[in-house]
Length: 400
Image (cartoon, rainbow, N blue to C red; front, side, top):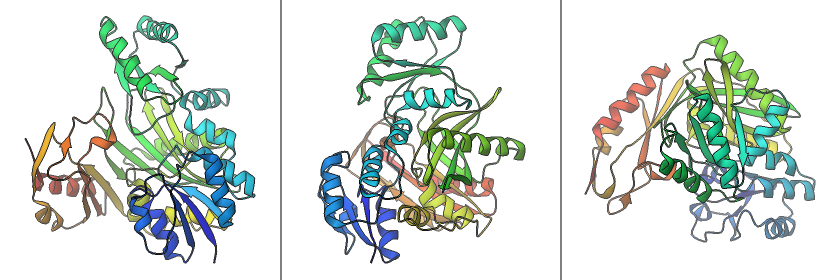
């Protein structure tokens, strides 16, 4: 029986743990939380280690004599995946690629060097550099985004549009810096236009586009993702351009084998890369929406790739899928009603709550503040979106 090590055992990595078990593969799950939900899966070998503790994870990997290593929907363990793969002669990205894919500043510099379209940006370490970058965009009369160089889930992201408000300029710096593990931040041109993500799978150096997903966000100032639909409803020629740019970005970063999740904005000057992750996308995109719209099990594909096997990533069906997240106000949840009614709507595939009665919920500033979601499948993207919105109307989250 083959053995795979999965870094992370939270709700994000649970689909990979369950899929590997279903495939008859021995799973070694790694997470610093001893109560992680993935550890509860029957037959899983539990390693309570931080996924970014490279030395300890490598020792555990050698001890178990693993045949493959991967993570899902999380950037933090990518360097660990890369080092273990190299040390043990397994399939995986290089450490250099892992750094480029997890540090937005390095990513930007690499994409610029390779001619991949990106927004104007500055890599910032200190306050003086930051103020100079802000002045640059102020003089060009362009709004700018301030974000940590090495975080995800919209954490630490802010928009500067009023350059006369020094308090907001200083707050954006502190807010972004607070979420940066390295202390570096990125100040970049604010791009306007529709946003998509591209799910790709690279096999032996060839990048294959599996699906293009439209994105809905809260907009300024935090840009938290509140919905997705597949396939994209953008014009075909635009989608073809997006697919090419995504593959160019993947190749520029150096991903030879494995998945990638590339976010792209369609601006008046054409599609530009927002950022790229050398892993499957989160937000239920690759675990739920892609299988519902294409019939492709990307999690299974990634397990095959990690084990050095050939995956089947060809579309099996042509359907549409969508997800919409629940919105709430700040306070303590006193009641949640209407779930059963919402589940009865034709086309609703799943309704999940992340926060429950008695829990405090915040204004939506990052992905962790969302209360729950509805997933639907239909014949067209607009139909799938409509089903989600009908279901959400029936769900009442009372906050006191």
